[in-house]
Length: 489
Ligand SMILES: CC(=O)N[C@H]1[C@@H](OP(=O)(O)OP(=O)(O)OC[C@H]2O[C@@H](n3ccc(=O)[nH]c3=O)[C@H](O)[C@@H]2O)O[C@H](CO)[C@@H](O)[C@@H]1O[C@H](C)C(=O)N[C@@H](C)C(=O)N[C@H](CCC(=O)O)C(=O)O
Ligand SMILES: Nc1ncnc2c1ncn2[C@@H]1O[C@H](COP(=O)(O)OP(=O)(O)OP(=O)(O)O)[C@@H](O)[C@H]1O
Ligand SMILES: N[C@H](CCC[C@H](N)C(=O)O)C(=O)O
Ligand SMILES: [Mg+2]
Image (cartoon, rainbow, N blue to C red; front, side):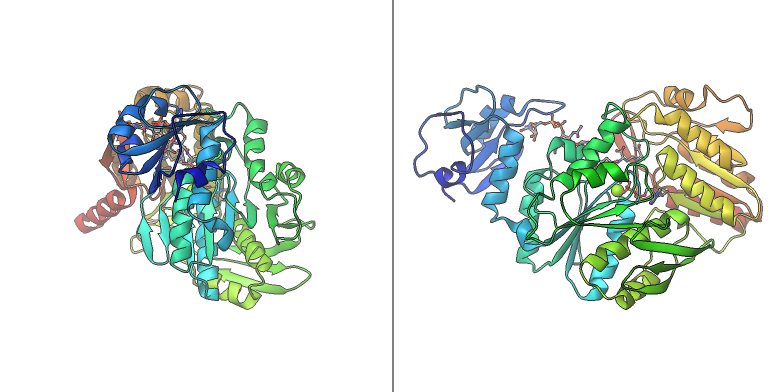
């Protein structure tokens, strides 16, 4: 594509150098990925400033630079007010507005995003759509999986991969949209059809100033659905959540609500929850039916109601939804039972917020027949104020808590553990910094009928200490320990 045609899309402050008939083969935001005929966009980041890498970019073959500050280079510089926005706009144009050729379902909320994307993937696949999923675990296009660095990647990655999805005949893409992504504009220019809200409870107060600021960031997904009524856009909102009104007020489009309360349009009733199943009735003015699945926990009933509501907006027949939910296996690392064959149950779960920990432990309380051991930590370089609250949730619902390291990142692990435990007066907990030793401690002590919950890392296959990621999988470690325990006895 011609550089001239591309930059004609932008509001330009100044052009230095001559833009004639240069051809752009790729758009890059990372100087290390620049090759011949790339257009390099300078992003002023949290760690470094992309404007400092123009020399490397031109050396690698950049034919022009998009910047928001003054830079000196040998190639034309197009200065714009905001390079992040320009990047989204250029990528959307360069790749031929691919998101508008897809059903894009965006999911936001503190907890349940990954789970809901998996449920929707199961429903739409069962319905016969070719699907794609982007989120915390990875990006999936059809049957192919690709690693992602962020739950919601940057705009360049998104538009580029939407193109790939269109080329591969994907019809429906289900994506998690994090609050970071919304406030950093990573989804700018993404033509979202359905915006879905799960819930809002404390997390990320290192990044957002307070809960209202956090709620506002989430609400951007709903304002970004736009003001036009002729394109069939819909919002799907958990009406039982205390911040539902914030999302509703931000949204000009029709809203389908779900929940357990009477005011929900898609309403769940008659819940029955077990260790490895749940069932409930779901009703709306259009249908009433009973859903039976292998997923357990009240929070998962909410996730399933959200999935039903989204599928309903696409006219997926309720019988199809019902069958898909009946077969769903759930999500790796979410309430994942490590082994059902032994008298001690080990559950690995990704709960890393006070609310998710409380939810998961409440669900365990409902099914437990004996004592509950909880092994839990809290991530470094993240919201510090959630740490004592996570500890309180663990203490409230467990018989024994072993506080340990999650991903300490660049923080001192012991300081994180102090943040979690300093306020605790009871003595009925242990602190074991090394996560493997902490898991061993719980499994060694658990007796027949006990449940060991290993929380916080779920599907993660690493532990990040001092910037280094070492291989670490709670599920593998626990499985080996539990097998060893019962083989010895
Ligand atoms: C704080 C934050 O969000 N950081 C994101 C940000 O990184 P950054 O600002 O530090 O980037 P940077 O390293 O300063 O680089 C600035 C620019 O210089 C360029 N550069 C850099 C080096 C070089 O040699 N040449 C070069 O051109 C970079 O390509 C970039 O364009 O931009 C990167 C590219 O988009 C993101 O990957 C990165 O996410 C980091 C890894 C991260 O951990 N983010 C977390 C907070 C996050 O976003 N989490 C949410 C999920 C939260 C949840 O749901 O619980 C998410 O969506 O992932
Ligand atoms: N609807 C829900 N409400 C509260 N807690 C939930 C809900 N769904 C899942 N959880 C809990 O939260 C944990 C994380 O779930 P999930 O991965 O689906 O959320 P997420 O929003 O994608 O999280 P992240 O932002 O970290 O990617 C689960 O392991 C479970 O403990
Ligand atoms: N998306 C979340 C994941 C947290 C997972 C937990 N294991 C941790 O490392 O804190 C975050 O980046 O805050
Ligand atoms: Mg997620």
